[in-house]
Amino acid sequence: MKVFLLHNPGLKILALLAAVVSWLAIQETISFEVVLPDIPLEIHVAEGWAILHQSEHTVRVTFKGSQNDIGQMDPKQIKAIVDLRTNSIAGSGEIVVPLSAIKAPRNVRPIRVEPSRVQVSLDREQEKKVPVQSRAVGKPFAGEVEALICEPAVVTLRGPAQQLQQTAWVYTESVDVEGRVEGFTKRCRVLMPSDTWTPVIEPPEVQVSVMISARTETVEWDNVPVLVVGQPQALWTVDVLPSRVRVVLTGSPETLEDLQALAPKAFVECLELDPSLIYDLPVQVFLPLGKAVSATVEPHTVRVVVSKP
Image (cartoon, helix red, strand yellow):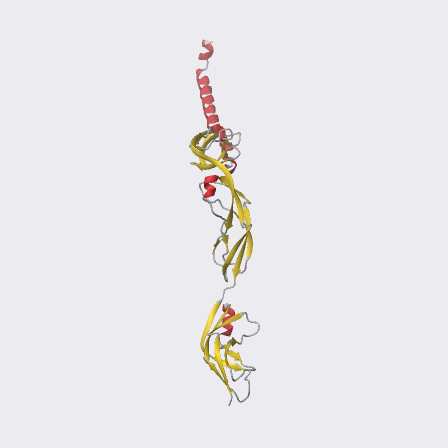
């Protein structure tokens, strides 16, 4: 045996060094480590209970495995699950997040979880119906957002009783109206009422109808004479007080631009008036056909006096 150990000692030392190097290389290959932050932490509780407060919603996990297996990991498929269904009681307490709670591919293994302890408060689970609202971001190309209507208008929240008592409504994700020229509808996700708790929301999405009204402008004319239309008798005189009014036209910018050069004509109808009476008649405005424009007059009525010669 002694002769065998001393025979060709140089070759034996080289073989031993080669074995050590190979072992180290294998260990380096299969002992690659990586740290993944923001792994979701789910806490499962018994029926009728809900998480009132959770000090951490994500954990930081260190994994060990071969470099190839580590490189193929998908963080979106990894989560931590702590099961409290056999130990759900009201109040606060500290729970442990063990390595066995990490759900990950089998060819890699978790070796460290941070934090490993989490503060949790439980409360009785209840349901509450609350209205859902939406908000618009951006600016339409023409007009303005008149209303956002959610369908259904009410959703059901299921979660801890104390949090539900403080929740009056919820919002959907914002609706982008940038560059829009007309109303539209969109399916929108209902947002959590707070970052500190996560109720179950039914339905999780609603349909939002965005109502966009046409953009309008106004143009004003002062001292517009009031014309008499339909004089009662040829020789009778008609006096209008006041004889001039203020006219305001409202419509789209394009329509008003077309009408800018044409002064509006205001008038009162005086057919079949009795000269023994005094009238307060509405002032009307001639509007061009085919133009989406409206008119208001100040004052909207005038005093009309008919006199015989």
